Length: 193
Image (tube, rainbow, N blue to C red; front, side):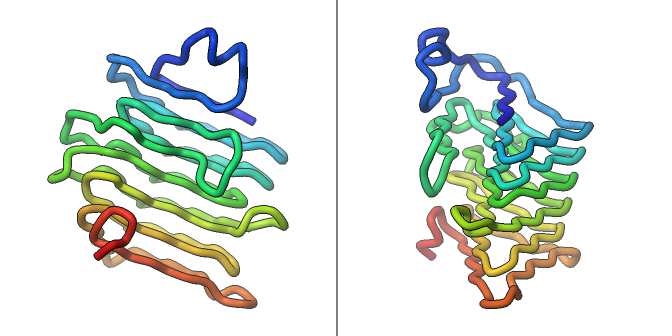
């Protein structure tokens, strides 16, 4: 797999392996302008601000963008990214204007509740495999989520959640695989609204 972060990780955590807690006072960004490709592994970009403007292929794995001041990365589980501390900025926490292809995709951020936390204007294709469902999660724990691009998953699930969720004219969400899927657009964190 591949992990890139502008936040700090203690030497002790790194040497022990397992789950990682990235945090720090830095406000650096992680920006992908090229191609990141793993076969059977995961790809995670983690930072105060995270942007994919290139291509991410995580064949058989999870691709994740996590924008926040403190981000927990679980090595296993249904969900892998957890944003534990919000950014104190009106800038977008996590954005995808490129292409992401993976078994599952997680884009998560925690930002200013009155500003855009997540922006998706590119392409996402969640292929799913035997142990991964083809799920796409765009979750703003605090802040707005904007979907302006394409999301496609065969027989999977798409959740777009935030304090507000905006689907623009160019947005396209397709879960029309062999057995169908589920699309949840929610105006509150966890789709409570």
